[in-house]
Amino acid sequence: MESIQILDAKKHVGETVQIGAWVANKRSSGKIAFLQLRDGTAYFQGIVVKSEVGEEVFQLAKNLNQETAVLVTGEIREDSRSKFGYEIGISGLEVVGESHDYPITPKEHGTDFLMDHRHLWLRSSKQHAIMQIRNEIIRATYEFFNKNGFIKIDPPILTGSAPEGTTDLFETNYFDQKAYLSQSGQLYMEAAAMAFGKVFSFGPTFRAEKSKTRRHLIEFWMIEPEMAFMHQEESLEVQEQYVAFLVQNVLDNCDYALDVLGRDREVLKKYTKLPFPRISYDDAVELLQKNGFDDIQWGDDFGSPHETFIANSFDQPVFILNYPKAIKPFYMKPHPTREDVVICADMIAPEGYGEIIGGSERAIDHEYLLEQIRAHGLDENEYSWYLDLRKYGSVPHTGFGLGLERTVTWLSGIEHVRESIPFPRLLNRIYP
Ligand code: 4AD
Ligand code: MG
Image 1: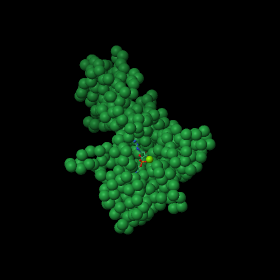
Image 2: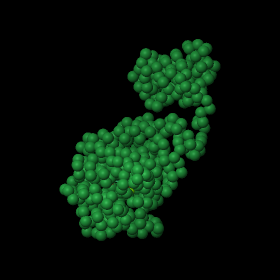
Image 3: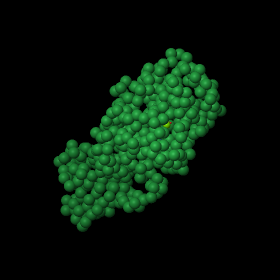
Image 4: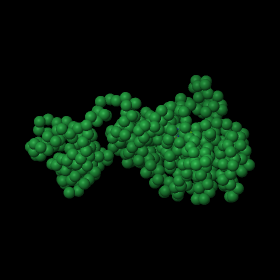
């Protein structure tokens, strides 16, 4: 007898198969029991009829608790009444792992309770759907960069540098030296771009940020492409093509998850249209000031109400171009005719989801970078390897970083970034 996954039930109609699953829910009468079965690929119904299986198996089925692990055997049938379309007529039932007093019941629970039980909460259908979207974004990311001639490079996680500023570093001991958990692999990716042309990384990054918002994680995953012989305009095209590709693949391959999450496909479809709008930082400040945001001055960084207002002025993700030099990291390319801004862009997601990409063209002049490293209070000895890149065949290059969890949160249409990663690390939480 073949063991199958629930998702493949449609290929086995009329066959008798075995499935390992958990009992998500159950209802029964004197003669028939309906088991809601979950195996991680999908949910479907198992039907146990007393007159077919006999008293012993029927009593076993009737007394199953939520989250009991079972091996069921039976015939796959079409089931036109369910959205999934198939069910199993159970003929054999074996309990593999018992479950008593499962803490997460079908009633409503508070967020703190659910977060304390994250190891179990992951089993619920909404979390399952979000992880499927996350998985699809990961899969499509590899597809996009592989088919566009990028090579995946893994930068180190223990580092001696602070690309995004020294305020939110996680410090650790590296034998008798100080080290930091990586904030961004970018500087290493610049070295990789000089070695291999077009590269991308995909790995965990850490920010000891004291931010407690619905967009901030302490540990998150970032995709960082870096491209040699490329200026910013062309990078913006790569960025919008990449994001539109992610949206299209979620639309194509995550039907079930989008249904569970109630995500409107018509809304998502708008994000596959290219190009995405672009607005300069200068114009964005003016737009905000004209619309009653008297708290914002040229030179300020945008907060989330500002980003949301700018995003709502467009129907698609929007690039904000060329921010003030003073609020951006040391490595960004200076503007050719203006002292006060750098060649960079953030991509702001629609619907209030905030910044999903930060990127820039990189400064390539050795003297300029050395000056910036000093001006930012960084130790130039730690950056001498980075400065070497500007000594030996320095070329125009540009790159960006996309935050995986913010993108998952946005495409899933959920409220808070904490549900977009299996085990979130938050300001007040490192359990479970
Ligand atoms: O804008 P950021 O800080 O840019 C960099 O790290 C660059 N070195 C990237 C590059 O050019 N290679 O971070 C990039 C993205 C943000 O747009 C956001 O999506 C995500 O990473 N991000 C976070 N996501 C969750 N929680 C946090 N605390 C995040 N900080 C940044
Ligand atoms: Mg940023």
